[in-house]
Image (cartoon, rainbow, N blue to C red; front, side, top):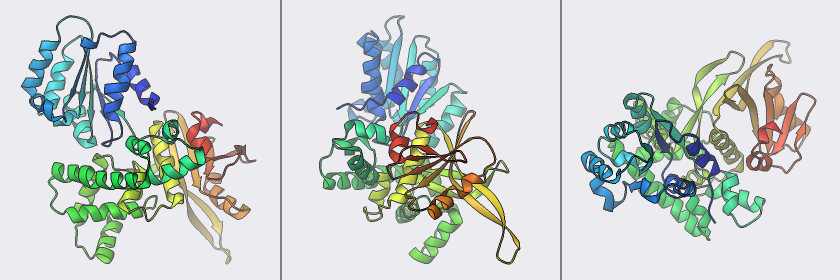
Amino acid sequence: MEIKRERYLKALVERMHNGMIKVVTGIRRCGKSYLIFKIFRDYLLAQGIDEKHIITIELDQRKNKIYRDPDAILDYLDTLLTDKEQYYILLDEVQMLEDFEEVLNSLLHIQNVDVYVTGSNSKFLSKDIITEFRGRGDEVHVYPLCFKEFMEAYEGDVYQGWAEYVTYGGLPLTVTMKTEEQKINYLSRLFEETYIKDIVERNRIEKIQELNDLINILASATGSLTNPSKIEATFKSVIQSDISLNTIRQYLEYLKDAFIVDEANRYDVKGRKYIGTPLKYYFEDVGLRNARLGFRQVEETHLMENIIYNELRMRGFQVDVGVVHKRSRNEEGVQEKKQLEIDFVANLGSRRYYIQSAFSIPDKEKEEQEKASLLNVNDSFKKIVIVKDVVKVKHDENGITTMSIYDFLLLENSLEL
């Protein structure tokens, strides 16, 4: 069964003929190539585009090695552009093309071509888009399958699907695998043989063990506040490593650039300013996170939070960790200032949502605890608590909405319920 990836096809269609290079980014094996070479190409053909006017080159294929040379690929493309009709050029893993910025700039000067490229490195592409394309690069970031997409291909009910998704994540190939052994081996090998290898080779890393240790530390602390200094302390106390603070910062950047992790900064809601460290790191795919820990720490509480974060990012939101301050008096009558955390402050244009991830709310005390931070926000933006329990969407007297993780993930308009 084909997973349609409608969100990303729509994003590409909306950008057609806009005079910019469409750059499709994302972690390796998330489905970028399938998106442009199958889904988008099929769309073009369905619109009546002549097959000869759709030019595809997969630069990571050995047979196309010759086209990694900038002059060779430009000469080749020149032989294919034989008339004045519209052409669509689709290039896969463009970072493997030498001087790719110059090649893409050259293509921008040809009036009857529309260019789409994929790449697996955030910093490499985004930095060069800004400096070389001068605002003429348009990025579409592709994530692993969201839960709704996952369920399009999963043969089972939504509850079995959740158990599978929270364990093995949403990389498209895992959905097609029939056994747990296949999935575990695939995810474990992919991390070691593809992601780690890419980062090491691209950044010429010598301390490979320290990089692996850092990934494991981040995986164990998913959804917890941390910073490079705390990580350094963990290295010294637990691993007995003398890795420097600067090296940790560098490695964190490498992991973000490869789309393995993303960071959520802390935002003072009332003060309307960013606080800085500590912050939180989330994995772009929870299956990869679990693979790093040998599937020994599959705690649904933290993984549900990670999945909510990824879903919000897929929907286009900028996502921060919210902080609010509450003043109260202790038993001695002394006034205290307490800091409360909102799991996510999600912003998109003029829209904002305050979201709390609460795996379970078994009693009134737990409910009050989960809602405390939301009650201390004094604006009119929507406040939502997402629970694992199957519950009907409800709104309390303070305007706080409670909904299940299933409604949140499966309904397109879930934030408006």
